Structures are given as C-alpha cells and as structure tokens.
Length: 333
Image 1 (tube, helix red, strand yellow):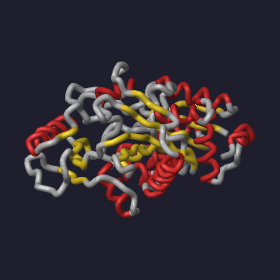
Image 2 (cartoon, rainbow, N blue to C red):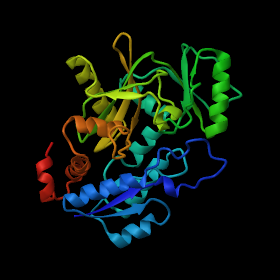
Image 3 (cartoon, rainbow, N blue to C red):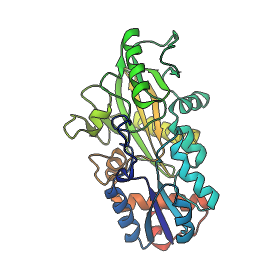
C-alpha cells in the first residue's frame, strides 16, 4: 500500500509582520513528518511527504497513493482545516481523519458548541462577538473566558483571557479582535480541573489531566519550556468518572462527524460536572510525549509512536473498506 503523508509545516508558513503572535503554532514541525514516515515505513508501507497547498492536487495525481495520512492545517480561512479534505474528495483519494464537514464544524468552536448543545452534550454558556464596538449585555455569569472563535493551539489566548468585569471583557475582546482578526468566543469559565481525552478509531485513550499554574492554558504557557504546566496520565479519577469522560469524548467525536482520531478538551467543575471546551480533529503528534498529550496518553496504553500512527491508519482502512495490509493485522482494536 502506498500512503502519502500530508502536512502544513511551520517552515513553509507565509510569515508576515502583520500576523499575530503564535499565528502558526498549530502547524507541524518537520520532525513530526519524519516520525510519521518512519512509522509507516517500519510497517512496510511505501510513503512520501507532500506539503499541502496549491500544488497538492497535481502532486498527488502523479504519486497516485492508495491512502493519505492527513495532518494538513492550511493557512487561511475560518475553515482552513477542511481545505485538504476537499481536494482529496475532489480527487477521490481516501484519507485518514475527518472530512470537510467535520473539519469545518470542529475548527469553528462556536458552531461546535451549538452542535454539542443540540446533541445533549455539556458545554459552558457562550456568546460570539463579531463587532468589538457592540458587546451586548448577556446573562452569562462572570468570570468569563475570551478566545478566538476559530483558532487552535491556544492562538489568541493570552494571560488576560480570564475576565471578571465588563471593562476587562471589553479590553480583552478588543485585543483578540485586533490581534487575530477573528470573531470572538466568550464563554463562562468553568472553575475546576482540566482534562484531555484522545480517541483512536472508536476507542478512547486514557484520560490526561492538564495542570496549569494559571488555571488555564495560554499560548505563552503552551510554547514555553518552563511554563510550570504538567500532565498526569492516567488522570487521578474514580473509575466511573474516567469512563464518563471517555464516553463523552466518543460521543463528541461522533456529534462533529470526526473519524479515526481526535482529542477532546474538557473542564470539570467542583461538583464533578464535565463541560466540553472543544474537540481537535488533528491533535498534535510531535514525537515527544512530554509535549503532545495525545502521544502521552497513547504511551500510557503501551503503544509505541509507530503503533499509534498505524492504528490511526488501520481505523481509516476499516472505515473505508480498503484491503488490510498484513503488517497491520497485529494492531486490531
């Protein structure tokens, strides 16, 4: 089987002085691509890397892969994660992960939260601001949390994202708007513990607890080596609460039309009630478990990096009805 690895690398980002700080933090490092390639080759696949972008369609037509391992984030647009799946659908090339719909729903956090509510899944109260000069009164309860409506990797979340008054809200909304040039999502802040739960195929990974010295995960903390943030896996939770969070992750994945892999972020209040923050359809898989929560959880199950990658591939193969390569039969779910 021939697999094309698709990614949008930091080194190829169209860097501009006008871009906000951390604008390209959600793009992949070359080290991640190399680790994916090595994992696939170790299981006997023929594989090659292709950058996402305008030349992708022609390059893939020439390479003619049987499957694409997609981690392409794209560069511009509120639904930029859906651009690569759209190209692959047009070319009729099968791929891992969510399609156009799932990528669009999950990347636009306010739309995802509407889907959660419609599906009966718990998420905090929220509103979306599209004009910083017109912040209408709401019945949302302070403190509130302010972030871009469609960004990842804590882009547009600084140390002042948690606000306690109307004046703080106005200042932070204006900062996000001027910095990221995006509609602003304002939601009730859930005071409590934060967890993240990965899913491969239909199987949730062990729950990871993320502990931050500020109580939330800003872009500065995410990118700093000395942030004071640390993770616990498996999270110290009662067995029934662990099962509840894992089930919630699978339900959220299905509600957003995501496939093969994802990672749900959730906060739990003092009463033990979980609230979904968001679901990432292509979580970070940088080959260092101390940086990537998804990998951190996979390691806790005993999976190597290569086995994790190839279980994602196997999930897509099952889902798409493709022939199962012999080397992957040992990774049955």
